[in-house]
Length: 239
Image (cartoon, rainbow, N blue to C red; front, top):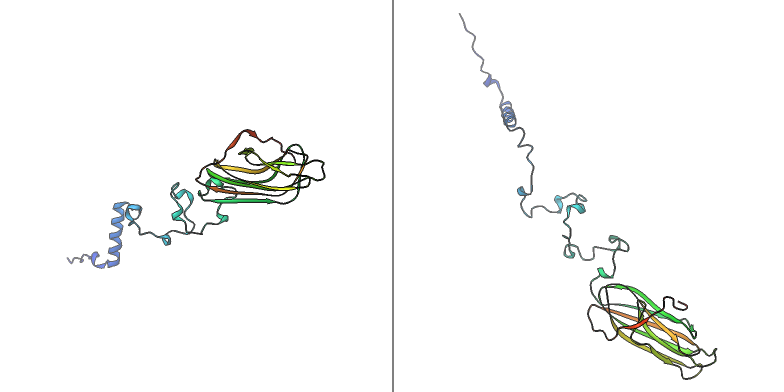
């Protein structure tokens, strides 16, 4: 009885089929764990990732630690006004460096024989520090009013007189005089308003040029202070 030769199946399987079979066995026993393994920071070499490895616009504010970015991380000149929210920066956010403000008024202002007049003013914001304030005025007696005028002037800050008022005497009808005073006062951080105010101590005057020069510095020594009990009226005449 003749016997049929047994087929040798292994000899008929190609090398590619064997390789695929081996891969199927490996993934079948590991449940796909190798293919599904997640790469973490531990698998990435320190300093090996650069900006080219991060998609443009993919990082958000929530991806950056609070207070982790400083001025050293920002290119000089790279931030403009368009990058800053309107009204979000005040004097307290600005480095404590010397700054200056000035105002000049030249329109004639008649000063009647009663009331307190603000004839020049400037508003601004600063950090805590000192202000050097120079107030100057050029005025005449009002020759349209009988008698001789006499003008008292003083700088004021935030509604309070600074130092003592200064006297400007004309020595005759229609005569003029000039006066100037410089004081240094401490200020708290925040918004401030400096004014040049005048009081009439005669029959009437006319204020011509008036100037305020204000310099801020983070440190200094005061040579004047708020005059106790000399707060300006809530309503200043002809403000």
